[in-house]
Length: 145
Image (tube, rainbow, N blue to C red):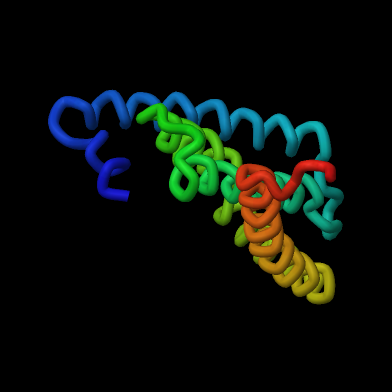
């Protein structure tokens, strides 16, 4: 990980901040587009934010295996651009928390509880599952016999 942090030393930090900002803008716009395409009904399950967070976590699992663990992707700005920027802007804990709060205010306790628990379980499961699958594919175990 020390090599990945080296990209932020000296004048390079401005380049890193620039790619994070650009990636964050792209990820945030994609999340907003998903919420427009799949709006939540009042008191209903926020499927768009759920899908965005689970998908984003899976993609983070893939990216971290490729960049940090296996070194398949070695370009210095890929991790900050995709991991921190795009996927950081795409996934959203704040909207998730606001959705849970909104559901509780509307006294949709069952939906709020299911949403809170399902998001945590599915997001953690997707990052783990995607990382396991990516490791298997990168290590050659994913090939057909």
